[in-house]
Length: 464
Image (cartoon, rainbow, N blue to C red; front, side, top):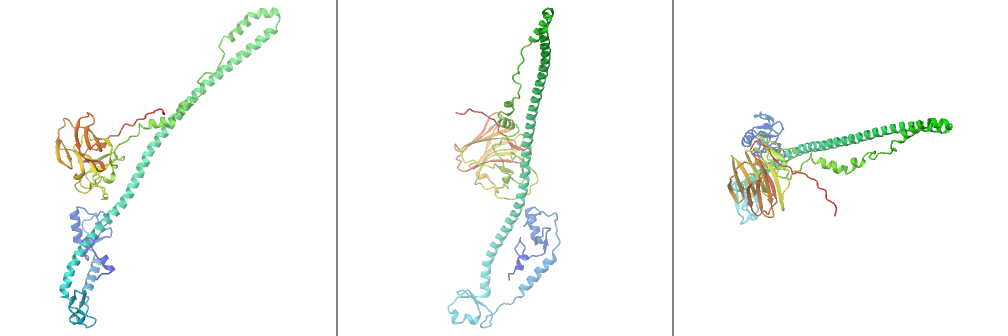
């Protein structure tokens, strides 16, 4: 008997009619024993459907739902077996040739002459066994659908969280850039204002001096003109003093406008944006490898700029998307390489346990991912190299590097590790790299591991 009511009375864990049903705070219901078993196996108190965490260990039985299940089962068991519509006899046989139920009279009739028969009970049992196998497959698929739906629900929520977090980080980066530009604009405006005030003051003082000199010359000119109008005797009597007065006014050099009196506009505007950009490089950095947060293990926390990672004790609530590594506490680079030479430096500091290397694009991210991984491992004070063709080789180093350079020559088939500070060679893998490779970092130590930014430089070259 299959009705729409069946679906509401099925436990999504065992796919059977509820037995002692309990309902979580998220309104999803399960058999009491099924839920306990699920929580024990998964070591979590999440809802198997929507993944919402439950703060309770035990829930009271949902008697209304239990009552519905009991009524449904009682109605299903009270159904009477159908009889032959022609002979009103019990349908005791199943015709294998016509694939239909028949009574004893139909069995002996001409219609079913030379047909093969089995008793209804035997035929039903055989087909029930077949349907049980089908039912197992259907239940398995239904469980998978519920699981994937739960993952999709969690992913949908995580997308919102990712978007909000990314928006905040983008705004923060632009806030820093805006602050830098505002401060730079203010400094340049202040420099312009200072030059304007200095040169305006100089010009004001020069104008004042020229005005004073003009006044003195005007007085001398008037006095000289008066002497010229005087009689000869009087003129000669005052000639000596008048001559000295005129010569005194003629002694200073002729006034002129000093060079550099105007504002040095070229200094303030010349290559303005280039000079600001050159200065800006001091506050920005470039990393050759950006880690992919969607690949990070739930116990890995990445920095805001996605260039460093550290281990945390508690697993984060993250979607189990295909890209996410679920076995090793690690993350991979956001961009892979399929040709050419590439190099990046990793600051390991005093980290006591880590793995550096590259992993193929096709390598599954779930479970053990060794088949497509070339790596240098440091643990318990020892270094070891491992690859798909090498299960482990010891490496002896005089000192523990603080920074390790990883160099990938994909076309040449070489992956090299070296000490960035001393250039000491650590190990080189020689292999044929045919797949896209992604940088790989793993740590189960407490010290953060981070990418070393490259030095940004600006070179001005003349046009040909």
